[in-house]
Image (cartoon, rainbow, N blue to C red; front, side, top):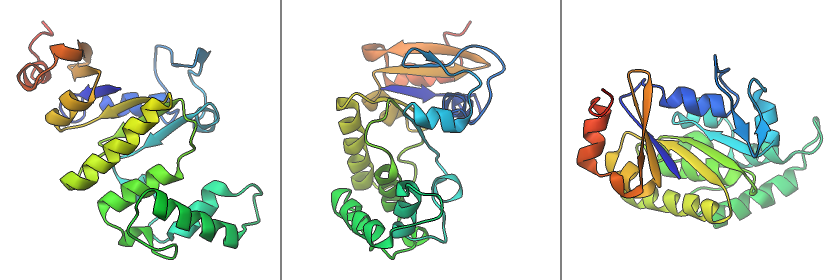
Length: 211
C-alpha cells in the first residue's frame, strides 16, 4: 500500500487521476499488470481492473438523487436498456448486510452519513481489482467508520489488490503505508517502511530533503 503525501495541490490528485485514465499524462508511462495503458480512456482502465474513489463522494462517486438500489442497478446491469429491479433490490440488501450500511434499499445516498456513503462506494466496486486509487479515503469520517473502512481496504490487499491513496492525515499515512511518496515543488521523494515517522514526514512535506 502506497500513500501519497504533500501540501494540497502538489500533484497527488493528478497522479491518482492519471493512473485511472481520467487525466491524460503529458509525459511518462502508465503500466497496469505489465500492459502499457498510457493515454487509454477511463473505460479501458476499468476493464483491466482499476478503480478510482474520489474524495467528493456525492459530486463524483455517487448520484445524490438516487437510492442504493438505483446504484446497484447501474453497476450490475448487463443490458443497456433493461433493469431487473427485483434482483437489484436483493443485491442492495446483500450489500447493506455485508458492508454494514445503515440504510435501506430505497434510501437516497444523499441521506447517508459520510461513512455509509464510503461503504456504499466500496460495495459498488468489482471484487477482483488489480489497483484501487483512493483520494482521502477517510476524510470527514469518525474514528469507528475510518477503522472499518481500513479493514475493508486491508482485506482487498490480502486478495491481491494494490492500493494507492492520498491523505492529509499524517498519522494515517504513517500507519497504513508500506511506502510514502512525498510531493514537493514538482518532485517526488519516496520514504520506505520504517523510514517514515510523523516528524520526518512533516519535514519532507515542507521541502527538507529535496535540496
